[in-house]
Image (cartoon, rainbow, N blue to C red; front, side, top):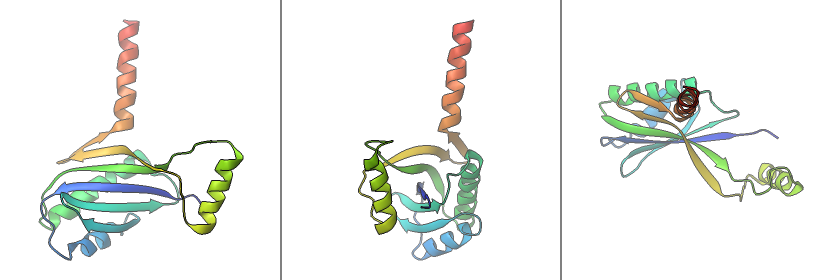
Length: 147
């Protein structure tokens, strides 16, 4: 059974002209597994689907490429967030969880609740890696207690 990892990306940007979504997807698909892009009220929403989780550096490269692509098309980007989509597991080691995994793999229908965890924010050329900032904060807390 092959694992799939999904990321949802929300981008706050200026208006995207009709039909540009397919151009954006084609440009991003040269380097990343973008499966879709659509206009939303605040900007654009994209979906990435992979067989394994992306490293932090890959997500940062994706954010850079999104910014470059939108800028080259004349779309002003203000902010964006990359969220990892996870399924909440009621019983992580039990037989019930294995049955749910098997049923989801066979039918393609997973009934466990969806949870989106932000993993990267980007804002006008700046990127905020939540995992890295949490590690830095923990190190600062440890160094203050040792001082």
